[in-house]
Length: 436
Image (cartoon, rainbow, N blue to C red; front, top):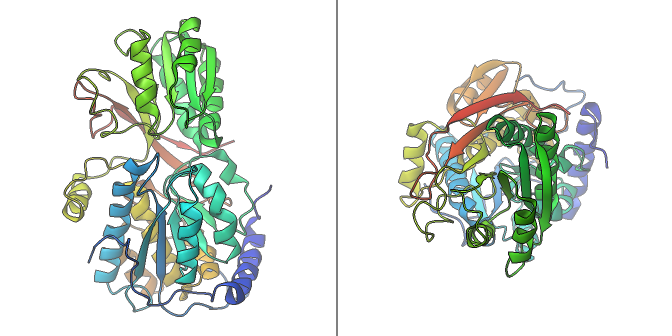
């Protein structure tokens, strides 16, 4: 399915919002936070093409992020990123002169219907924009419900290439880059490390297959050979047969593409004699975790490398998040979540309206072409002064293309130590354009 083209986006967004007035009441309201809410304190489009104001004047921001399920370890940093952004936005005077209302809900994973139920709750509370989900497959399952209601869906972590061309009424955006860039970086890294034979263990879904395809393409173009690829069922009780196929191919490197089940896959690799001390392991953002492997013997992951989208988050930003959540030890997609909330708020300010249609029409505009700014307050002050803005966030330069994808992105290359945790500072950061 094809995504709506730029001019068609505005018309489609306006049409979707007009339907939403009947379907779910249009913009947000001042309803209180749900029980699951975590505690926490441009160039303007020409008037002839901009949607008419339809919001109620209060920006209601919902989240559908993992509190349970296979990506639950990503929930705390993502919620913290949104919480910090909303805290700063409201301290700066809010959006359209009113505090932003925030409602957190759980996304679960693809084994449950939690995400769909959460979206129903958010639409009932008249959310104008929803941040989530983290899982690409979960987002696929709820995108029609969200965008069909005229509400913006903005993911901080979806990387599946499918979203570039998905039918979305021009209402879907993301701060995480498509898998094509992460796959290229990891494929190049594997070849550069001198691995001429590679085995790939990938979870069987759009995320796993997309990354595996791109890694294969890039690594083989650089001279390596993928000698075995196994697409496994992430819900399987055990992975001995899958790992046995990789072992039979005798690769010098093994790429692990998955989520929380990655701990079971790692244990099976060690059991079958393919430990990281014998074969080089490489991971991706979905299984790079500082909590998932702590029960394993120290040294199990020593030297393992992996990639995570996003520039280095400043220590000052991390400290702010730790004040919100003292237990926070993993900051994956925290910056992307923070930037998503800020961009939504700035788009509403630029549009002078909080409806999903108006926000979507301004998201690309506040991300490029104007005076650079890095905080909501600084950017909002420029907007109030009649200036065009270019928001560059904690996750790096943010600039949306016609598909709602970031046009430029950064990928960090990280390495695990003897404590089975990866260092907070990457070995290197690679920035590139998102091209076909």
